[in-house]
Image (tube, rainbow, N blue to C red; front, side, top):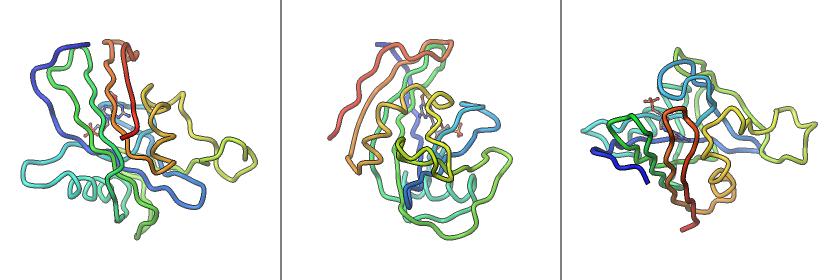
Length: 164
Ligand code: 6OG
């Protein structure tokens, strides 16, 4: 396992409703050109839940009754900090989904056996390599934890994920 000096607290949040999930295509910064949930760093004066709600508003333009669904820990070779990420999910939202400078929100079909659905399947090949391991637990409403270590080129070297 990779060693690390500091840990930074992040959030990552998803809307799941009516057989579909909202992901954002990241247009800049860390994870550029990958689909992910909406989220970012927890600021000193806020709780992770407050940060998750704020980031969802900032990156997708919507307000959602988010609930915690998992915890992930990532270490990336060459970065000075590890990521502790609290994951959140909501089954509804208010407001109009809006593209921002950072994220382009898009719906994806949850079930793989409905290819004729109006939305494409979850684009795991354009997501972080860890997502395929825990996303099924998120979609099944099973709380989960996990850790993954990434090499400098972004490949996942070592990992474990488990239901709690
Ligand atoms: P900003 O740079 O946008 O926050 N994040 C990761 N998500 C996954 N699935 N895998 C990883 O493996 C990740 N590393 C970071 C946390 C970055 C956003 O990206 C998530 C935040 O939601 C390394 O402020």
